Length: 328
Image (tube, rainbow, N blue to C red; front, side):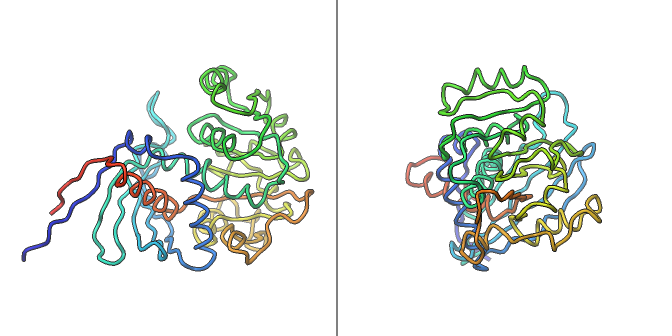
């Protein structure tokens, strides 16, 4: 059988880095949550396979019905990498048309992953769940996710101060020396997780810790807390006792958190207020009082990567960026 010619647009990490912006990420992510709240997104649960020492390989598929695009991100999480290698990197995103089923683009998704997590769905959640006048943000962790959160929140929120706590002050000072000139808010170091939490109106946790680092009693009334990476670094009591605990996606987050044996007896479906999609599309109110303590948790879904990747493809085509590969 003779198959028609099929071409793919290939975008390297360098191509993606040149095209992606915090504004693009935020717009794509917000649109996915709105569509998800209206039942227009398919986001299957991740299937994890073991890799390395305590790590995992997994596929993150998704479908955006309104955009006519489906795809899958092939990704990993390897916490015990050799010295100098990131914990989470080397991601690949493939996009296909839902009309023909044919793939039309493949790209590196490392920067997409970093920006859509701390700088994407956490920023979108903060728009609806943080106090509008919040001026001080705290970030726990200064890896790729923490740095992405700092840059995106600084660009999209009117912050005056960003506090950071890392395992070593040297790591923070190296980041501050490199990043401060490009930020509007002042970067300061918090000597302890307790000091960080107590002073933060917006608190972002971006660590790979498997034990709680932020205690519920440290978080003040009115704070918004976004658990970016592992969820283990947040005291589960905080989610259970919060005025509102919001999930990014009921099925995928429920599978990874509520059905997780590590949280058995600590958290239940009854503790969940709703999903961000339900809030963004207007089915549920977001923040209703300046005194509410609100926690947002999302373990990620492929639909977010697909929406950002599709936006990048549109920009790449208009600017002539990338390489055309002949598949058939």
